[in-house]
Structures are given as C-alpha cells and as structure tokens.
Image (cartoon, rainbow, N blue to C red; front, side, top):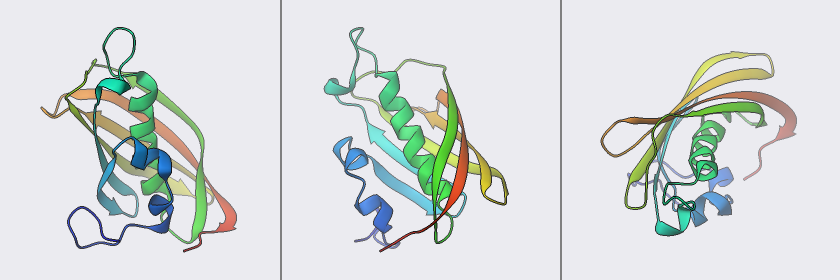
Length: 139
C-alpha cells in the first residue's frame, strides 16, 4: 500500500487504523517527528450547532501526533494531550493537522500539532506527550 503521493508505503500502524480510515483521513506526510494528515469534514461530523465536533478535530490532531511520535521500532503511545480550539469549522471544509516533534528524551517526547482549515487559518493547537513502550511494532 502506498501513501497519497504514490511513493512512500503506508505504515502497518496506519493500515490497521480503522478509526482514521472511517473518518476519511489521508496521510500527507510521514517522516520521523513530522507528520501531516488531512480530513474532509462531513455533515455527520458536526455537532448540534452545525460545527465540526471538537472530538473529531482532536482525533485528527491525535492521528498526526501518533504518526510523528512512532519514529522507530518501539510502539509509542500518548501519555497525555491538551488542545485549544481556536476557530469553528463546518461541513464541506478540509482540516489538516501538522505534528512536529519538539523534544524526545529517553522514553518521553513532546509534540506540537497545528490544525488548519483549507484557507490556512489555525483551527486548533494541540500539545501531545508521548511514551515509548517496550513493545516492538509489528508488520
């Protein structure tokens, strides 16, 4: 399986990620410590006010974070995350999350994720904290 550009293979972690697939997420960039994921907002992703549900904005940011922090053969998981919602969006828009490693020391890491809309406006900012387990990633 290849990525959206037809060049880089999609990692087994993402091939098995049914939640991200069900939400229509597309991995745009997958480098160690640097990931970009996009998601079109559908009508069934909106809340009672017709705005994109915050949990789905978080899910997009969390997916980019997961890709960025799984940099080697160890399974790395979130140990915590905080998000600030800065601009509402709605159905028909496309959101993009860009996750970047800030620091990685031993088993712990800190990653910042910026979510933007199709115009480049910032929709949300997330800071994720990662923990590398002893569990090896499998293909």
